[in-house]
Length: 93
Image 1: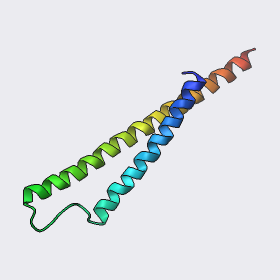
Image 2: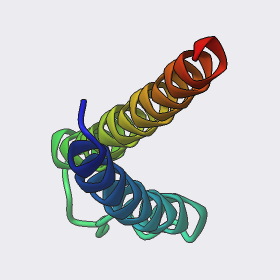
Image 3: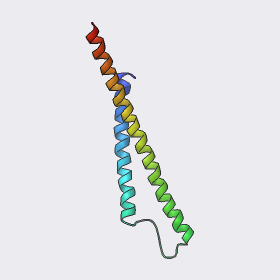
């Protein structure tokens, strides 16, 4: 992975992680504030569908948060490996 690729991947990972954290915060605020769409005239089926949709948004957000965190870990690992190789090559000269 070249230095340019690492930089681009790190920028994408940081932006993606920030977006996921904002979405995760909105997901938690929805549940803590009990703002799941519900009206007294809704049937039990409609209520469970609304709860299921909210949970699926949370699951999707969590999945992409994990993806961007792993991308960050890969970039950091590649950077450290590249530095370690450069230091090893400089020490052998």
